[in-house]
Image 1: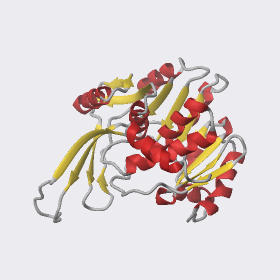
Image 2: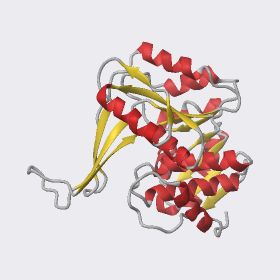
Image 3: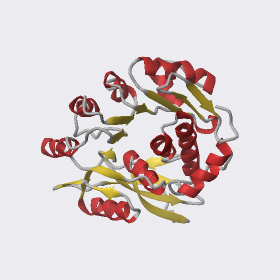
Image 4: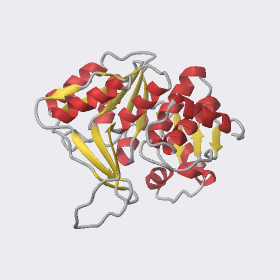
Length: 305
């Protein structure tokens, strides 16, 4: 079973305003309210691809109840810990002003709630996959990813980490099955600017040398690079399409890679599935469907890795 953890899930209020004017009343042209958070995005795309999974994390208040309602309505199983106080956050995403977002803080997660999550994770064992994705709320220790991996060490759990800076570097000694920085995040780790796939390759290898089994580097329109567990380095451009919504594209790439790996245990297939899923979400208002992913996968088959 694949499990995803989202420490601070949200309801994303996604709006478009044709002629936004600062300081005045504005009215929306379109709006969507969707569950959000990196782990949840992975869960939703896995479910769309027909891969059984379980979403874990913390929710609170009426917004938390709505997150659960929507996620389970999409066919994702969930076992969230309900916090007694506060409300899960609402994030405002203003589509008509490039990348403008206002993200909520979310509820306080106490030590007792954190231990409840650890107890749920204690049930994982050989053959299970755990996805740890996104930032950590201020109310939790900033080494929580490391503590989880230390606690699960030696149990045969395949762990995926999609995080930045120290959150990522501090877990490499526990040999995560997959890490997925983008090119900017990878460059930041090593103090360099990575502008194309060729430049990203040696630094993806460096992360493997530091302990990651597979390093998948997303590069938006440039495609992606995979330094794989078999020692090979794969690179591919992205399929063609119109960018509609970049939110969740990286999470979709993680989901596609995992789906592909579980289907065939073949790195080339998993890599293509990852790029196809990430691109399909970027070309859509919503998270990628299986049909959209497979349409792009067929395009990917023409690309030499």
